[in-house]
Length: 350
Image 1: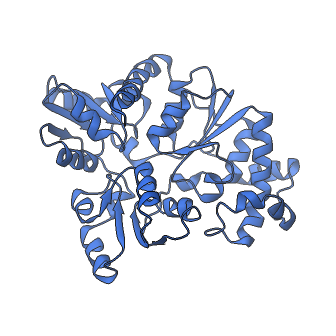
Image 2: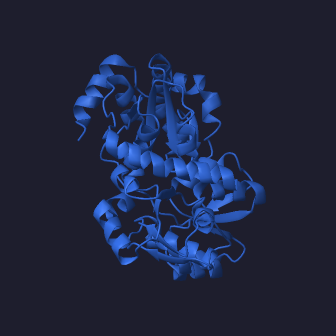
Image 3: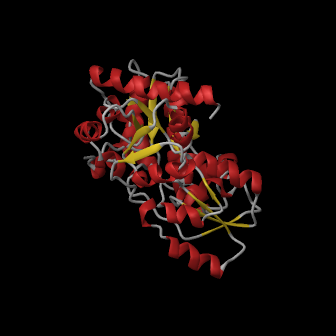
């Protein structure tokens, strides 16, 4: 666990991180990307960290990959690549920098390391986990294989390297239905998200999909009644749900898709008002690019994603601590499953 007091003290000795209106004004071009959701006072606090990080990543020959659930100051301020799990996995294979800083949760950093075994992959907080990743083990997959002999295992990327290595192919929420439909098998095991599996089963009825009993702590909290109540209050609001939500929630939505799919949909449709049934940072990160769209609540925060902060990113680059390592044998098996996903996605045009 990070010693926050010692970290803050050390960083203060090496960088001028006091709130600064001058620095905020100097970085006004960056602020324009988020000024709808970040106040000028907040930006004066964030700007010195953004400046220090952007300078230091050049010195370290580092690239920052950030998931769509990162806070706006990370997403817009310091990230070199942003996207959903599939986009980040694909972009990780193209990285030429020596160092990758993964602004996301631990399984994402593992995936980057699996795809870049010779590079240094840092995660700003080792404790940034994932409820889905923690819900499944290799033993759980073996139990599913015993129950459904011969069925291929499609594992969500929100899992550990060990679980990926025990699987046949990975998937993300943006390509799960296409991958399942493209497999030459009648019965398919999906792990660990039961709701994603059930939503895919509705999309691909020709397959017999069986699933593991896991769920995301952010998306399982939403209820269909909540959305019905909201629609009765604001009937013209476009409701968009992530496929990690329960099927009855997805059924109430006007559209369901991955984080990248949600961004594409809102950008194309430009609804006057929209409710994003997913993690709260999503709306914040696309609000400034879509000034004509009014993003309304409710939403749920991911406690793991919120553990990644500007201060921790700066510390990881300063200290080079938080390097993610994966056992080479495990990494090889996991790499096969992830690469199959990437190759199949490219083939299917997902």
